[in-house]
Amino acid sequence: MLPLDKLEDLCVRHARLEQLLCDPDVLSDSKRFMDLNKERAELSEVVSSYSEYKKVQAQLNEDREALNDPE
Image (cartoon, rainbow, N blue to C red; front, side, top):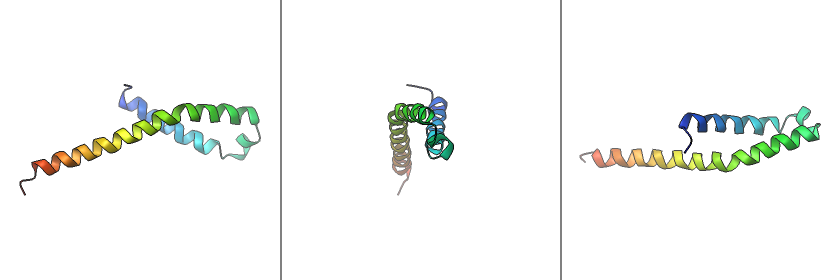
């Protein structure tokens, strides 16, 4: 598994790529558009999996807190 800070960096890059793909300058440059779109596609699965991992971690933390609650 990649270090969490590296995964965070990939998420930031993925979000930036999505912004760039909406930029008119990028849209007018088909080669750049295709390159950025390919990079975004390659990151999508990792970003999606990491997002799910964070949700599960948050739920686990909530469940642990609930188990430690005396009520």
